[in-house]
Image (cartoon, rainbow, N blue to C red; front, side, top):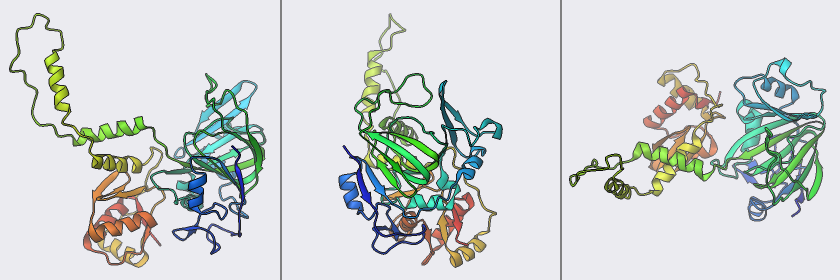
Length: 397
């Protein structure tokens, strides 16, 4: 299966200037080279790779090598360094001291910086261009800095990914491997057998989409940076555990175990069959309510990652906040995750029930992530003031 080589159409210079004939989402272009979202989902999503030449024409990297080095030393940012030398593959986790990092001139090493959308406004804007895919699936923007020959080896991801070349060049080899076994006893997941179907070099502005489990190997040609837009694909086991934890807090089973017909026991250590049967029958009263699943998923998928933290502002009293917010409007901060599924609205792992005009207001905020706060009532003001105090939203000053 070959990657379609799709050439972009009109140029746009920055993340803020878009040609009118590009496919749009919420007024922003979808970086699919002029292809419609409908065609992309029908022919490529989860099915086959797509190479888009000049997906973002004249793209200028906004997160450069110096930014990556700063991030590697920051304890609040999730980072890794991967190297390959005569001793094999090596993986280290940040934060790093300067002396612990390879020299920039040293070849064949890679730095990975997670969550760049949380620390860089343009990174957040870039990630938002992919909101034609549900927020429930959108994960984060990861930046890879690599010196000449650097990479993370032939591997596959369990999720969809867009790989945007931002700086320098990277050589990609991709293939639809049937054998996805990995090399044992190696700190990174390297495919044991990798035979690429095709190879190509990406330049700044080029982008490669890969569906889950599609094998790929990217190697830097000189110094380069690649921006990876990744998507969440939790395992059903993870979701099942989350649902069981949710049920623990919401379960309602009346009564208490009794054994009024108990008889004399000659084997007191034996777990009585009657007890097992009684509890089994009682548990049949538990039903997997679809509303439980929706409620649990919303909380689980908006729960901030351990590396995400919110910086509450200098708190304004309610009257001050109301005055400033009415004048300037508010926006969800980059780390805030907000979803909805009637009758719930979910934000950063918490949820509330909303209906009528209140629901419509919160739905609009979740979709647009910004609000000019027209036709507000007291309860909405109070809710936004509370979220502002948590650092979940900010004033558009």
